[in-house]
Image 1 (cartoon, rainbow, N blue to C red):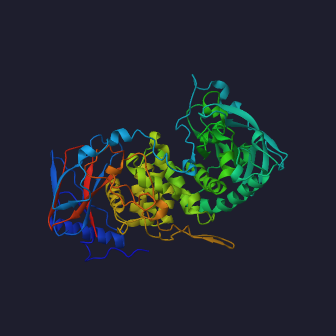
Image 2: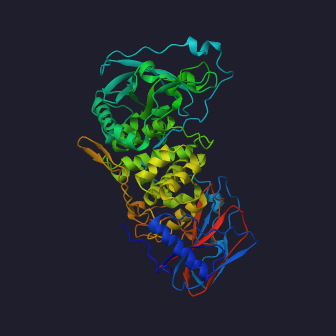
Image 3: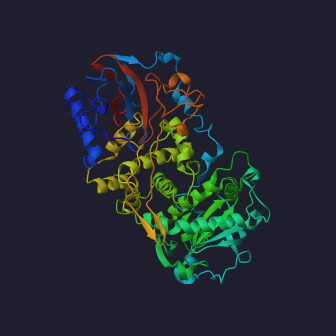
Length: 580
């Protein structure tokens, strides 16, 4: 673990904000020092620069590396974030002129992460938040007293028992077809089904992966899911045990799954070619998904008609062969989605947003990785290179235009929170408190620290850690092991190891930014290290919701320096960080 930021070392590492004078600068540092040790203080220095131009003046910083951070602590995009317009007393990091730089607005239209290896594209399909309907609501024939439960499976037999299941059947994942699936493995807590056309008795290998799986793969998945099932539930809670009814808009529990579903309370894992895209170049992008439609009694219209009426999630057969360890991590991810569906998050009057649901599922992968004995390349850490390169294109949100990058950014933020605010205890509080979205994040942090943090102050701390690997609030530390699972010989403490964004494992290349725009250290192999640091003269794109942009100003050549910022969106915030 890195040494904490101790009192008396304020000039080495501090976050500055607003109209800082020397006295405020020292006080701000002391405030952050106190939080680094007690985690009990919550207010952070903020500055909304409201004049057409505003200058920050700092003292006692000669020889320090200086960075400017622009954040957008709001749920809407900031079209005109502030930019650095002038500096005094600073030796620039690069003598580049503004005219030499390409427009980042234009560059942002390029797809993020195109240079990443294929596994980083694996994601989970995000079904529509509201049920798709055709023309009219279900009629009276869908009334609760006129429906009946599907027949129960009688002593299911591996390689013999079959079911007709609704699965998606087109690359757009908007068309469903009923396909026969056969039970290929049975565990204590799960059944593993394979749609018949995606099963083979032949040997399969990652080197020659196709869209067909064999019994050995299914048995492995059943064993791995059986192992993670009680451990993940200890951290996140239990999945719902009720089939629901929504024909009349009431969306209420109707019956116990143990009595209603053909497979009772058992979790069903269904393998097939998700999106039917195996033969589409570069289209194998969905590793798995959970869709809550299966928790509902079917009705006449909309996606609920395709309910399989039970606990189901779906795994891509190609990925199961090509990337078996990533597929195991996907089991933890999708099972968390299933659990989260059953958690009451209504106290704040908000519906759980996509970004929040994905944040929880990514943290499930993070927390379960050691238990599942997975390499870092199989879990969410394999997204950190993409985060380092392109964090400026996606905030703490789900950006439909940058879906893969959104996963990376959400994981980076969630992992940072967990490593600074209680480890697995933070994850449990986030998952099980009765609010959602940004409210849930803030509530989880404040419950564990006794503080009064806001998303604005958390974003400031998080963003400042991205320019300083030794920041007091850094993800580069091992989290507290605050939750323990024990059952028989199994004991697990949900370890969360340090994340070093400056390591070779997180290095990156990019086709989105020009070399003139970046001021990062370039490695001998041509890659960059650390989160992208922009030249302060670079043309800035709109700041995404709860996003940030980092600028490298240069080295303080004098004791007293100043930085002038342009006018811009009032919702953005400006900070300066000084490091050795």
